[in-house]
Length: 198
Image (cartoon, rainbow, N blue to C red; front, side):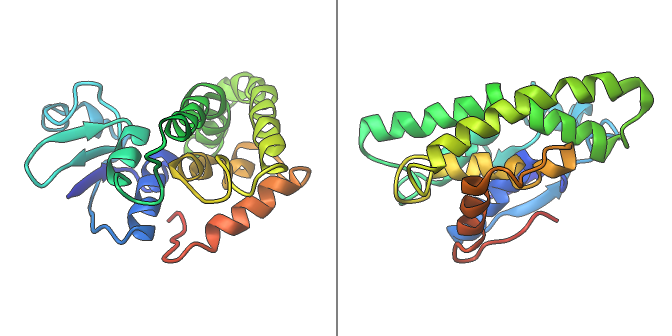
């Protein structure tokens, strides 16, 4: 299988991380989002939404949206659950990541790391801080109760939220006051075959 993505994207990294942990071989196709490569006719044949990551399956089918890709790759592994309620709890955290976490933490990081915090985007950058800390506090509360987000073992919920949480400081979010998150980050980084973000 092939993964189209950008090296600095947390959404792409979390797929690379899960694939490494599960020992799934993925060929990497680098897509430069700042150069507009997600809007080329060739890329749009893969997905009309013009976003990375995109997984190309062995049979030529394409799958987009990072958490859908995570769950697809994790099917029949310990990173998903056959229990219907537990599976829904995994998805609950994935929806949380996309709607309550990423719009703040990932966007602030993008403005600072990708764009160099230009003056024209400063107000937007600072406006993301409150929402990002609110999301981190929700995670902190859960991780004070359980070692992973959905109980006692890692799932795709943890992988999806690890992607941007472990680099949240690049978006201005000081993690020092979130002790449970720091310990959780250490647990994820201790997984067999763990790889860091390039």
